[in-house]
Length: 159
Image (cartoon, rainbow, N blue to C red; front, side, top):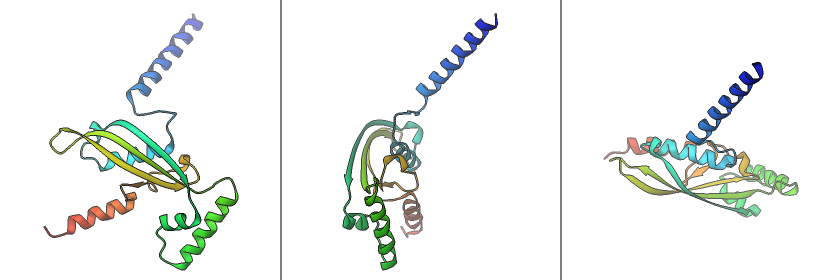
């Protein structure tokens, strides 16, 4: 009797877990960068529940020191020295700084509820896509903090 009860409980848990995975956006094979980018994108949509991914295109390019420093938008010599050291430390090991780019094509409802196809570009400069976080990815030329600051400035602008 206990053996059958244990098998029934195991089957129920497996079925519930499978149903959860199929009903959610969870995909264990996706990179952290895709997950981070979609989280940021959904925050910026008018109706995030209507979001549906169509396609993801990924590219990666190793960066030279000059490209790495340009991507960081450094303003002082101290920043340049620090990031040059970080670049050299990564390049000397197995962590060559790389620019990861993703273009996500998606459908999402506009302000009138009509589904509209959109595209967003995501960039991250790191040694791995696995370390991309929602606060560091650049979505349509803005980090999360930069986008929020831009929204505040737009709301204060005279009409």
